[in-house]
View 1 (cartoon, rainbow, N blue to C red):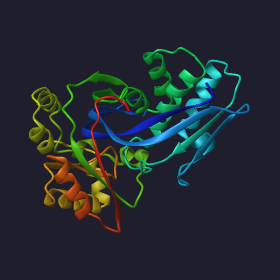
View 2 (view 1 turned 30 degrees about the vertical axis):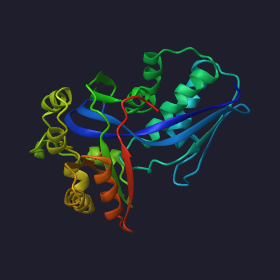
View 3 (view 1 turned 135 degrees about the horizontal axis):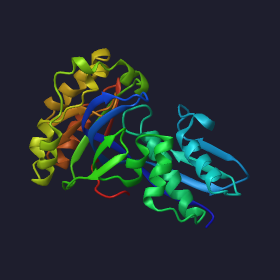
View 4 (view 1 turned 90 degrees about the vertical axis):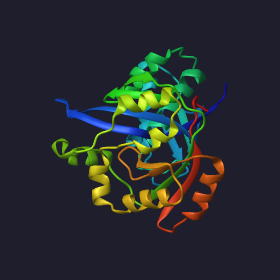
Length: 287
């Protein structure tokens, strides 16, 4: 096999709760994660001796600061892969947006190299390597609808709903996940998601309950500094969204819509020069 190309889908959070800060500096979280159709294309091919990353988006770093580079380097070192790798990323997921764009590219690299070089790693072995690269990588390796706990690496499948129509809106600013978590004051959080009730709503196929009861505690940091997040949430609701919330550490905001026609109408209506809009939908299995 001369090369392999893998779709690397984005994710949204349908709830996000931060329970406590850990002695190691990370935070214990409990959140519902969902794969969406919006995706990058990651192409991997043998090349030279080292690791090289080429990305269509100039804002994405190359070299050791790129999480996909780190994933490839670790796999190459752990399993004594003699060949180098060239990683080409066709970037469609916005950068620093709360959509796991970097983590999903890293997951695609791990899966792709495992196949390309016939390493034969099982899913849990790939996840173990992925965890050392980034907390969201184990989830991105599996995708679908998941309850994520610990720092995000403890994954439990949740009943999936049929396709959910979404509109994603990213204001033209970037947010540091590290800054958000370091600025989070756990003592001041007054509203938390009732995660178990949301899981039950998935089992009952109750989209309305899910849409109306999503909570992301990180909004207490990101939305407090960037009022545009509140503005976008309000606009999505005015355009007919059943519910709206910020994904991850932000700043991307999504709205859940009842059907494709409603999401198309909202996507066209909400166009604004200050932000980027994406129409997408949830997917149960990785693309």
